[in-house]
Length: 154
Image 1 (cartoon, helix red, strand yellow):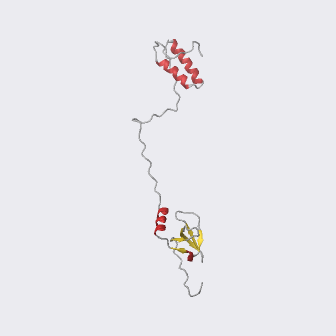
Image 2 (spheres, rainbow, N blue to C red; image 1 turned 45 degrees about the vertical axis):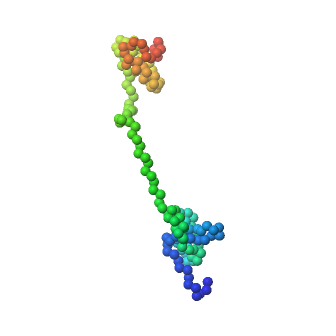
Image 3 (tube, helix red, strand yellow; image 1 turned 90 degrees about the horizontal axis):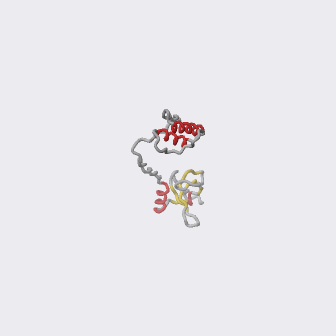
């Protein structure tokens, strides 16, 4: 460079500049630093930093400025749609405490047999079968049994 030619002015930090490439597509970047003779540029929206000489850079044209605005505009998150309430009453909170054993009707043989089987099922942790036995006890007096219990005791 001859001594009579003025040096290329350095762009301010944060300024967007364009660099023409051999592929025909210009590289656009924001000036992030300079170290004497080279400028450090980063693509709009982030990416790998590259270096270029100030003489190889130019101001972006209108199309490139529009691309910079698109790439640097923050994306706002959409609010999730409101969750519809599908129940009319508050939710049921199940107890952690175990269900107490059923109390058979006094003097009723089917209730006593169902109570014995219920204790047996609770001991084996078959809670579904134990609940069936409690339902049978609640159906006292017994017309036709709802549950077919084995004849013998457990």
